[in-house]
Length: 236
Image (cartoon, rainbow, N blue to C red; front, side):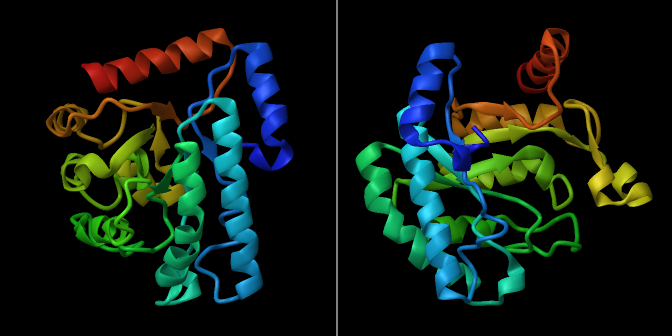
């Protein structure tokens, strides 16, 4: 659910009950603008409030977690430590409501080089997640976002049980190299991702969580197409 800022927990609970739409998580709002890595204390306080609101929204809707971008490398080397301090303040609420705080791998320059080589190690990202020493912190691993940085299956194995949920989309490095990195996204199943390798890695770590298609939506026909693409990519 990507509109947490616009609703109260009770409003979303009623909407989900009325429509029958299942919501498995909330997406933290404002995490690019009000960053947990910010050096400004007031900004971090706002970001923490946003996170706690999303925890309550996800719980009210019947979800099990919150997708969170922890911040940006633009906030300096101390940014991740600042984010960790703030996120820890939300862990008692997350535990009380049964909500996982799940970090998404995005192009924010944290724990990998944004324009670096395509064989980068998962260890710094895994170590950051582990630094919380909490079962309420994990990874919302975006398969398409990672295609620029290395073998997707290798990162799945490296993160292992830290992965709680997945985003899926296709990515073509050749298209990105020719047209710019934001033009590299393609249909699920297309592009450079080794989907057979992804399937094998997910089996190896015993993944059984939710997978969200982060692609353009549309009518019923479009949604059926996306579902077919997901099944082909993930089930073979």
